[in-house]
Image (cartoon, rainbow, N blue to C red; front, side):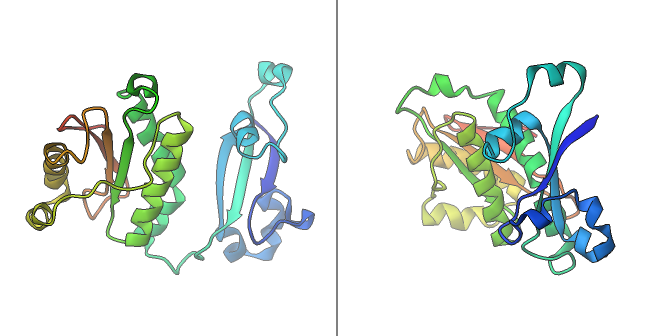
Length: 220
């Protein structure tokens, strides 16, 4: 595979002096390189995200080779200053969210929800509230880009329900939450709720499920 485009995109480093393949900056030291968060995407995806920086895919180039782009940005939290599990989750969040959105797309077609009809609600459960917020926001954005009508708010339960659910594990609580949201008419028959959670303390894979008409199903 040929990498045709190598560039950095960062709020801290936007000058042309830094627009280079990170491997060419190896002389700055291992810590400098580790503080970069990089993601390899197709040229078509890179052009969609950054049309002013990345040219559109040429038809002839894709016939003879795969062309991709490496997008790198300076980590907001340097390596070693964040919990190890949090660091893994955040570093692979793009891949995890893409898998979740793909699973949702296999069950819910935006066209079936109708214009001005149902909405998609998203919430995330993770030990660190800031990381949970990152997960929820990234999932909402990806679903919206996929054509879904996404709410910026998470659905809320009654205080009594919350008190009961606190005694359950996340795996047990999400199906109950789904049933209660529908029973209380927080979700209509046209709405869906996507829940993303870390189910076990010793894992770094996010799990996700879908609530529709009061019925919960795990997607991954």
